Image (cartoon, rainbow, N blue to C red; front, side, top):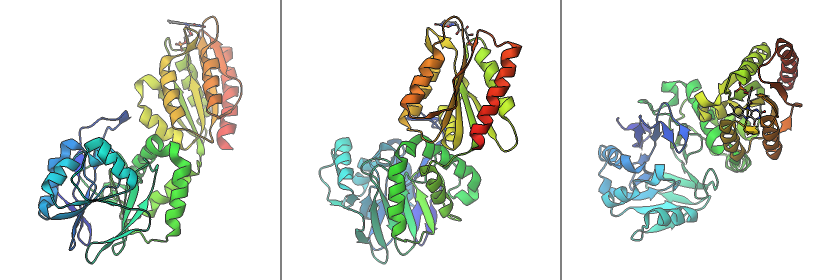
Length: 395
Ligand SMILES: Cc1cc2nc3c(=O)[nH]c(=O)nc-3n(C[C@H](O)[C@H](O)[C@H](O)COP(=O)(O)O)c2cc1C
């Protein structure tokens, strides 16, 4: 993997983790990257590091451009270990490097690594650091997505390095979204937002407003994971505007599990009935699907249909796990329908309804339930239920 110049001696010097498939529970079928950036000026500046196992890649990349021992400034935009994990290795190679981070960043670095022998410079929004001909402007972004998070903006070059904001879990040999395929990168950005940032939507909306008010021109956005936005950097910023506003599409996501196939029959019949022009339908059997991908689709869906058989007077356990994950992501602005099959005493639908109510989501009506196997008559009633779902999706 070679280094790549973003603009005027600002280089990508990170690492690509092609083989990671599970990133703290987030499925990463294409791997991911840990993006760090080297800014060459009178004072050599490194922005972020990489995950611990990839420190040698980072230092090799830096060394191909400049002597790591000459690093003057190490900017830590975010303490999480995928970005700070190789900090001790970097500091050992860069004995005179001073650390720039937020006060929470320092607190986090001390907790994780016990760094004592370094000069820390604590920064806040609006602080500037001159590194020669270039100026770096800091913008604190607490809870986008940890308390320590901040953005670094390269003033003269109009390059924004916002760490996890606008990123994607995408390990690719190419660095720029316009080379990889912008639509593909946008899909991965949506998946990242849905699974990592969705619960923080209100905070992010406020921060974006505050950042936009600074009227800083942006030519390039270099996030800490995945592709760098160069051709049309505002496309992902505008998408964040829609996602934080919880805008939805005429889209229905069916999520279900089944033991003996009855709930599966209901789910597949629903998918067929709902599939009318203008309404997008996604169907996921939880046990054979990836929760991260389901959440990507939930992000902009207007309707969510949850299906489960009754097992031991409760919902099927995979649905319980899915709803626990969903609850933490604080979904809003969704209409929910429930369906399923039971044997002798319903339980699943009642339990799911309780969870949906606790999440404050709107119900589209009473659950559609059948005893054991759905009859032909029940399947034709399901077609009527599907019409209600279509109406809910179109509104
Ligand atoms: C281990 C087991 C436990 C079950 N527990 C209940 C129950 O507590 N209450 C009930 O009404 N049905 C119970 N059932 C029956 C199922 O809900 C019923 O067979 C249903 O039709 C299964 O739907 P499915 O084909 O989508 O898996 C149980 C079934 C199994 C296999």
